[in-house]
Amino acid sequence: MITDTELVSRFSIELGQDYASAKSYVRDIPTQALVYIRSFTHKLAGIIAKQHQLEFSGPNLYDRIEQLNQGRLIDVTAIRTMHKLRADGNRGAHPEKISSYPTSISVLG
Image 1: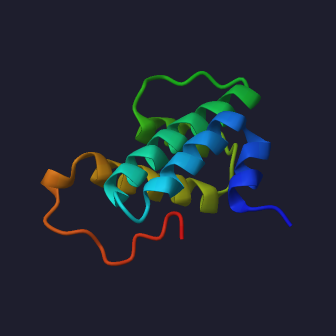
Image 2: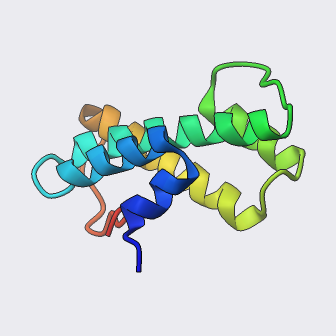
C-alpha cells in the first residue's frame, strides 16, 4: 500500500514535494499549509493544460480552472475541488481579510 504523498509523487515529483511540504505545516501553521495547497493547485492546472496542449489566457488561477472546465479536460467534481483548494489557499495567503476560519478545513486530513 502506498501513502497519499507517494501517490501524488508518482503523478508528479514537484507536486509530491509541494504536497509533502503542505502536510508538514498542517498542525503547526495551517495557513502556510493552505498557501502550499494553492501553489499545488496552480501547478496541477498547468500540468493538465500541458497534457492537453491548452494555452492559458492569463495568470489568474480561477480563470485557469475555468478554462480546464470549459475544455472539459477534467470532470466537474475535480473542477469544484480545485476551486475549493484555490479559495482555501487564498484564505491562507490573506488571513487578515477573514474574520474566522471554518472549523473544518480538511484539505490534507
